Structure formats: C-alpha cells, structure tokens
Amino acid sequence: MLTLQCPYCGVQADETELSAGGEAHIERHGPGSSDEAFQEYLFSRENPFGVHFERWRHSHGCGKWFHAARNTVTLEVYGTYPAQTTEPPADIRKRISGVAPGWTWRFLG
Image (tube, rainbow, N blue to C red; front, side):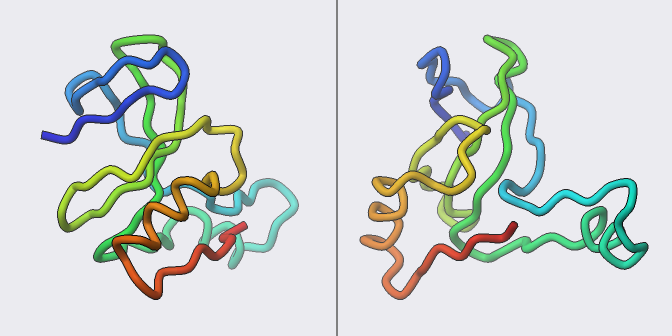
C-alpha cells in the first residue's frame, strides 16, 4: 500500500486517506489559449515508467493539496512537498539522482 506523509500536518497517510490529483508541475491553459494548447493541457500527460511527480490531497485529514515524488514501478516515495512549490526541492532531486542515475529534473511549465 502506498503511504505518503502530508507536508502540512505531518501525518503518515495511506492511500485510502488521500485523493490522487494527477500529474504535478503541468502548465495550465484556460481562456485565451489556443485550442491546441488547451487540448494538450487536458489530455496529454507524461505517465512515466519510473520517477513521477504527482498531486495528492489529504482528503481525510487536513484537506490540503501537496506534491509527491515517487517511483511508479517500485512505489518508492522520494518525498512530499507543498503544492505551491514550483519544482521539487533540492533534497528530493538529490535523493532521486542517487537511486536513478542519469535522471534530471526538467521544468514542465
């Protein structure tokens, strides 16, 4: 079972207490954007085999949204951080680089 620590209230919550919110750090498009950009925003996602950044909501706890870095193959969690953060913190990027050589963070927005 997947267990994530909420960065706001500090609770170790299993996935039954959380709600998944999809990929983190995507560029959002809305009114005024082209049809192609809005289509890309709605339907195109990375869906990687390995390191992935996701949005989660502590729905049965403090109710806040946060980001999690994890491996989609092994379910290893590299860390969680506030949703307002525009990129993964340096300690999480370093932890990922230690277990996934050659991995590099690229800003998606």
